[in-house]
Image (tube, rainbow, N blue to C red):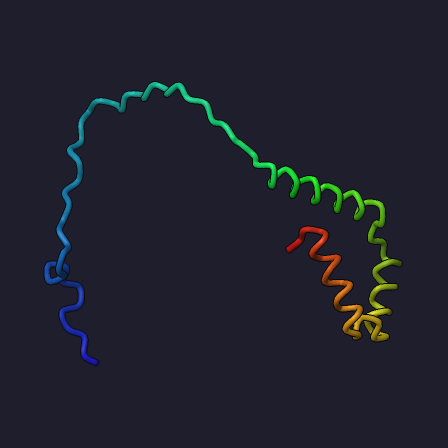
Length: 101
């Protein structure tokens, strides 16, 4: 592959040069604020999802992750407690119910 005319912008098709806006000594005038109001509408589905998330958070708060709890779960993983398809299914269902996916 051979590249020629590097740096020559006038050969590019569809490119045109733009001249800068004329400068003036007048400072920019402030723009007056526009009267408007933003609104948000949350659907029933959104409210239900928020309620599920809040419920999952409250359950998580009740069972805090302490170093002891983390160690217990780690030992169960190492012992193969989560290797059965039944346990994988159970964990997957709980993740789906929590709304994390």
